[in-house]
Figure 1 (cartoon, rainbow, N blue to C red):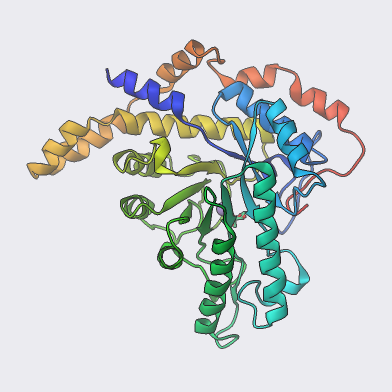
Figure 2: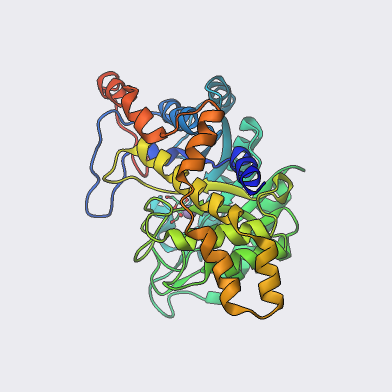
Length: 387
Ligand code: PSV
Ligand code: MN
């Protein structure tokens, strides 16, 4: 019975992959190039299709504009469909242009604000062409020094831009607003936390929701509390999954703290966030700087499946009974029993029942795909973080 719940949950779980995970990436110290890295968005989709082929659960791909700019987005969407994929979220980028040194939609100069807004509206045009539902907004806007700009005026400018984007959305489209504590601004960020994002979303209306990027909090933040709160308020729009040890490390989800991932997934389950009509988009926002990229994405999917399975295994009746009785130890044990279960054998069985490999990383590595792209993708310019 419980295993059926886990099986159904895993069968219906879809996680979006980011186009940028397949390009070269690094830190501000060094980008290490890898052989066979895609040279354009079409090749990124080909790599994303491999993740789906071996896991069966990554049907959609997030684009980042202009990193994935093409002349014809309908053609790109058709190409995705031919690979069994669809284009997912459109991630806007108003952080890599000289004009944005002092901000984008919060910049003190109205001409820069107009330019940034134009980009965001162009992204909605792209959504129309690709059939995407969600526009992801993350702003690098902020201040390095106290007094550098007027904090309150920047909130007003942000609200104006968000309103203009919101009003441009189609009936089925949404905007999802991502927050981040710091970086690249070090003193103050204009959307630093979930409360700021939530307040703007509330003001905008029901098509605006919050994105939780698991790497964007201060150490020790109780992320599952935030997830519970946003689900309760029907404002959780999306996850950007990754892991952090120190800052926004963008490591593979579940690598740094699998217990935290389990706790988050448990709150998603309790809050009904896995139901398709809950409108929560699960996606990876990761970079694979030193590990091979496609297996890194596959490994990440397996980490999520393990955490979700454990969350679905929680005996919620026993948990509720212990909570009502004030039985602290039994309540904690109900969670820990599920967390400490080794779900890997069930997952391997489920995969085989679905016609998927029991060990997707091993099967992918044996497929010869990495060797083939290393041979075939010579010449041209490899895609990289920021290109
Ligand atoms: C910012 O750190 C972020 O998490 C945003 O989602 C960006 O779009 C993404 O990283 C790009 O790497
Ligand atoms: Mn993110």
